[in-house]
Image (cartoon, rainbow, N blue to C red; front, side):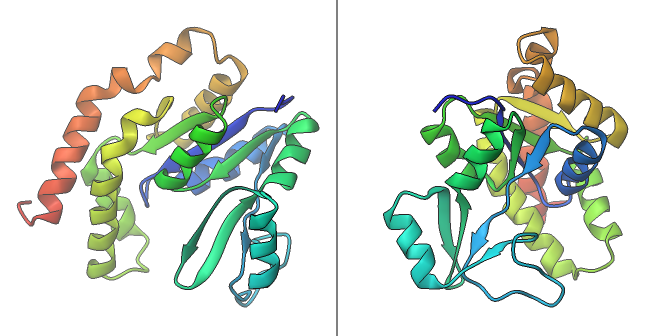
Length: 217
């Protein structure tokens, strides 16, 4: 596949602010499109077909699987979720940089199928800051927050597989850096955001998350 736009995969710990980062990026720059996933689950109140998700039947989803119509898909809680290939390709051909905001397993599948995809992982400056942001939401119990931190500990094992690390400390700076990385993927910023340069941060993050999950902190 030859692309006019970039296929960009953005992952990150729950609470790292990747959703806010993507939203602001799209508000400030016009050449990005956020891929909309397809699902077999029923719409929740306020959700619209073609906005939050493409809502389809199980039969329609499985037919699309059979026709190789997804970039990646998975089953969660008896429902399918997937990234439709035709929507993504259409946007890329229009010259838009297509963003897929997905978890780490899906990101690895994308990289296998589309080696030219750019993978970015969004981190907080520290695990303490990650926990502070999760607590700051005020919408989740301590048990749920610990589950999210436990999930983050698992995800931290795959960070080095990403092309770039974005440390979400200051939102405006992050948005600017992310856009510049996409615009100038071969310049000096490319090297400065490579995971190789974040070894200490990644290792500290991984150790602190594992300590939190084990109740050592």
